Amino acid sequence: MKNQSTRSNMDWMVVSLYITLVVLGWLNIYSASLPIEETSILDLNQIYGKQMLFIIISIPLIIVLLSIDGKFFEKFSSVIFIGSLLALAGLFVFGKEVKGQTNWYAIGSFGLQPAEFAKFATALALSKYLGDVQVNLSVAKYQFQALGILLLPIALIAPNDPGSALIFSSMILVLYREGLPAWYLWTGFTAILLFIASLLFEPIYIVLTALILIIIQYLRSRLINRNIVLSSIVFVLISAFTFSVSYVFDNVFQQHHRDRFNILLGKAVDMKGIGYNINQSKIAVGSGGWTGKGFLEGTQTKGGFVPEQHTDYIFTTVGEEWGFIGSMIIIFLFIALILRIIYLAERQKTKFSRVYGYCVASILFIHFFVNTAMVLGLFPTVGVPLPLFSYGGSGLLAFTMLIFIFVKMDANKVNEW
Image (cartoon, rainbow, N blue to C red; front, side, top):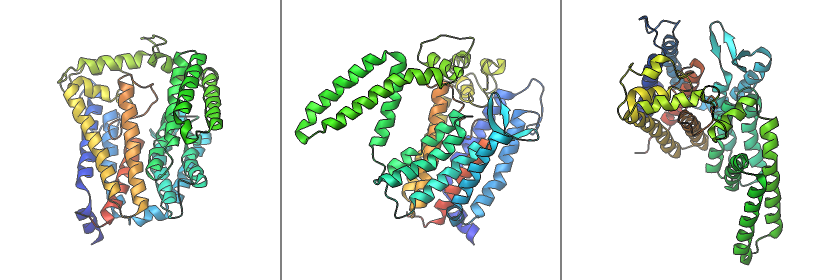
């Protein structure tokens, strides 16, 4: 009876969008990795064969997730979160180094990336914490504790994989939805702008501009007792941050990170070196025109000109073979999935499931936004895959768990139609 209730109350729009994206993703992986000789789609020596295996494994995983009582995830959220942190910490001792990053546990010919599973574990932990009726994010103590939940996995992931660490910061949007003061978002947004501006212009010009703007703002608002001390503190912080950017950029960032920013900001041109990926990505996407070259007909794809095309740069296959129209359809599907999850999150009867729904939407959004922006050369290459689309067993299984845990939570409530 419980399984029948789950099936009848399950949101089939989310399920349909999930299936559609997974199938279309596999088709693009197949195109990006198809060898000259014909082989079985289950050939585990081929990338598309391995991805098909992961898709098949996802089916019983979904059945298990939908069979579990929805309260299980809330009850054991802390245990799941601690387990994910231990798995991340274990990478420093037992992790396998791949391309200079120790992100994987080696399991035979396969690899397990715990950072992918830490996303839904952190989402559960944050939902559990914010679900407490006593938590009020207008109070500093609760703000720091909530941010601490996000900082724990970030601290363990950032040394090996800054791109994955970036994903966890997206859940600050969830905190904002639940009452975090807006100045946190404005501070983060301002810091990003100052960082970029400091790489493009001399710091003294930025500081003088900030001083002029603060003075104008102070004069405009002095009638409401604007605190000159606060304005002075803001100016000092902006100045200190601006002058520290060059030191951090030169001494904290690794060389390949500096190169990627310089390429993105137009401070360096290196079409054969660090800028090769982005340049080839733009060529592949642009060559598709309006309708694309057709499935399995992409010359850039077949020629292997775009490195990592089956993973981080999978969207270039869409752009080349399916064109602008096909790319817009994929973008529409992702936006539809994210908006549907947000809609369902607002209809939840418990704060725990509502917060978790927003976490799912935030994680999917930041992955989708960063990956597509990266492929189009609007964002540095940071190794963020396209959800449900890029090759990777850990990613597919983790996103499946992330989404279907919420599907189960939503199915447990009484629909309000």
